[in-house]
Image (cartoon, rainbow, N blue to C red; front, top):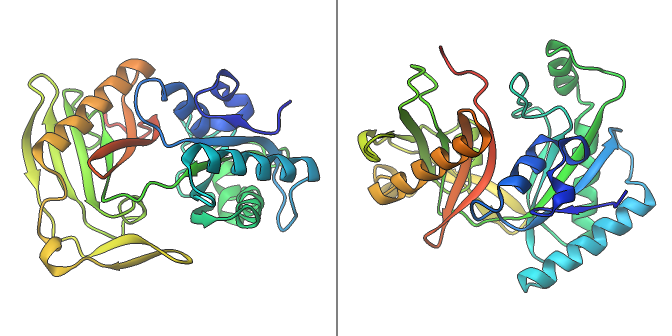
Length: 282
């Protein structure tokens, strides 16, 4: 088995090899812009242990190739877990494993991949696995390494209304900066509801957005939103509609309502993650 699989390639479409997160993104890369990257196929999760030698060599080589493709000597990447039983209809694993952002340089990427593997055996991750009825013995985890998008705006988009169960509405939660503040719940985001039938914004609630996650030299940091931006809408109407279109397209491709993470950088919309909505009210 190859030690890495590239997003968009057929070998990276298999959940059993690269986990739900990476496989889903790889399969959907033909439908929308996904930041380039590669997946390290499933490894046995071990805490505080280095990567096997052959895996480390492959990660270093893949990072060098990614740098060549991007056109940067040492690109900034996001390193995220992609558990083999992750992002299924019953278990999303959201927030259970470590994520490292703005990782720069081969040494740092190798270390972050190893820490991601170890995080699958953290007490919280194991407790979640037990709650979901998953094995605590053979815990295997893949890791996704992608170019980090310097997001101006990040959003979580639901192709159905998760609160009411309305299948005819797209719900968008959006705020400034990287998506960690939105996903982590440390900011109250703007909320947009888009009618699927008419593809128009039927309502919007603009929040006072106090926190945002930004890139800093040694990683990322959550900072105060500048006062002049805090009460401004994070999305224009055309951007909200573009996100809604994307969610509808992904719902059609996967055959079920989806929870989508995306971002806008320099006016371009990027797909960062797509998984089933696990909490849709019926």
